Length: 514
Ligand SMILES: Cc1cc2nc3c(=O)[nH]c(=O)nc-3n(C[C@H](O)[C@H](O)[C@H](O)COP(=O)(O)OP(=O)(O)OC[C@H]3O[C@@H](n4cnc5c(N)ncnc54)[C@H](O)[C@@H]3O)c2cc1C
Image (tube, rainbow, N blue to C red; front, side, top):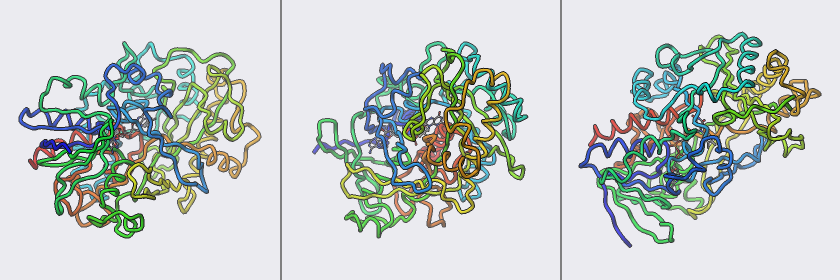
């Protein structure tokens, strides 16, 4: 057994972990060790080339978590989670939206004192990733025509830079346009958390130790203090890495609660039932599993989809149905490839690779709530994930998807987009009633890959919260969570920028405590 000691041990060199590693090692007297389960992405072209992101799903760089049966949804969804430095920012589409001001009002109302809009946006200002609206050479004619038709059909404005509306104003209620994406428009490479925060300092800062292909199996506790992490190295050895000051959990919304539960931190009765020794009863760990569910409508095109693109999903549309809230309540991505995993399984034909266009309506503030739990004390066994998709009491989630498919059909009937479409492939024009559209929409449903909330932040008095507003785990010392698990509620748009901003602020909170 080899023992090594650092000031901070970061579990997970992913989106949040990369930010923390950079910011904490700005002080040359602070030592940091990052434990990352996957390999480095340095020089790994198949990761760095953003356009090839679809090839990473279900690959050796994907943990590929499945869900338990979803009686009202799709039981076949695979939740991709990246096993590589940079985490999901090395795997995802890098669509970059600041959280809406009202999303952060919700955080404060949920007890996350100090996470108000002005504060969080000021941390988003610091993000090092190169976030820009899709560059002119990557804007293809089809998406351009889709933007024009969407604006005409729904009456929403065309937006040139969504984030400018959030950083310099009160956000936006509706809009359509090319997305903002964290990438280098000259090379097509990612500007992921690892590219932006780690690559420039690897080998430069001697106070940073990076342990790739190393898996954190259990937290080491001394009474109620976290003092280290027991890890398994690539060659199967076990060792303990000690933290003099803090252990920082950045393993993401699935693996952070999983590691806590395996370490005896979680709902006591449930832990006992699988034979895990209880170290600290924390009922909220694994509860409150959030996501952005989405569904799909797919068409065959009259001519091949133009080749130029950033990553095959370059446009976005936001619609607001409920005027009592200033935020949009329906979002659509547009996929310029057959996004047919779920439709093919249901028996729908797939157009050729260059002859499909899809719209995927998603629910920005889904009302269904899920849960994650252990089925075994064996650290190799995946936890159970139950998103409880489409189970909210008033059927809001399913109705949102039905509205989304209807709005998408109207856009498809509007020029200049209409001329690109030869026929609707899924669900097909015969599917018309609300009941039929709901049935299709739920069975073909997918995830936008945004699990969050499983170690939620709340007021120090909130017994359902896992961390306090300083992100410290309740009732323990030397342990913080800094990743998408801490979200008290889901930000309406894609969450990566919120994760980056959370990590930027966490670095300040950690330094202030030290
Ligand atoms: C396919 C896909 C597309 C997406 N597209 C977008 C998008 O376009 N825009 C957007 O805003 N969001 C997107 N998301 C979501 C977004 O990427 C995530 O919400 C965000 O990156 C999560 O960051 P995190 O720090 O919480 O976790 P992660 O980035 O997942 O980091 C966790 C890290 O911890 C490591 N790890 C886990 N367990 C252990 C362990 N026990 N020991 C050691 N290491 C461990 C993992 O290998 C990983 O590197 C997408 C996600 C996916 C999967």
